[in-house]
Length: 244
Ligand code: SF4
Image (tube, rainbow, N blue to C red; front, side, top):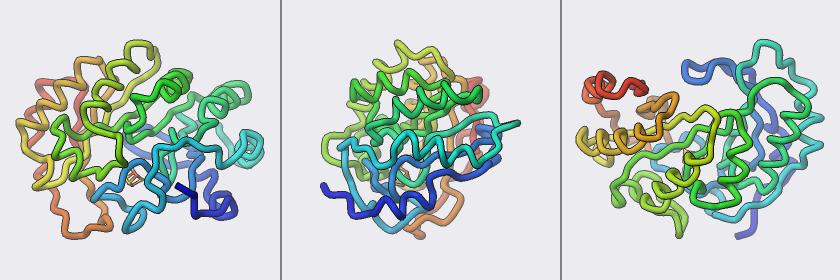
């Protein structure tokens, strides 16, 4: 599918931050992808009503030199991570691995990739993600129907395929691993199902598994938040789990 967004738009938001969060500390973000070029069209997405380009195709949108030259304007002292994230799915950047290598050559700050997890079954993505110091993968349900309703993925992305991709990826990843589960009432909030997904992810010994409820208004404003208390007992069972 053709990308309908210009590189001019992309350049405006290439680097952002520093941003402070409870989950990752202080980060400077790099957006390698134009707004809402994504493999998902999540019902809770805060960015726009619908994904602009729903795709699995990896393309280069910004060069390594552009990234380094923009980043040079940002102080990185005291920063916990340089994060590849932004307003689209960062693993769709065909030069993600090159960017990670260049950041390692030029900075001593660890590199974190914040991915929606959808491309983790792709061998080239696995190989490039392994070069990062830390990776966050979102995987919100093992249940195929709930996964589809929540994430509205591009054709070819299924819960089973992502689960298998996670198994493959983590077997050769030595960095810090984070998982995220986004829960939305009436879609994937059933505590037994959430526990099943947490149990699946916990076997990979992640640094943290975060249950997130989309507290900021998304584009589908009818969404309701599940009660946080539903999942708090799981924190005792799974030490890596944090419920937000
Ligand atoms: S993965 Fe992120 S950017 Fe893509 S649709 Fe979902 S919430 Fe939006």
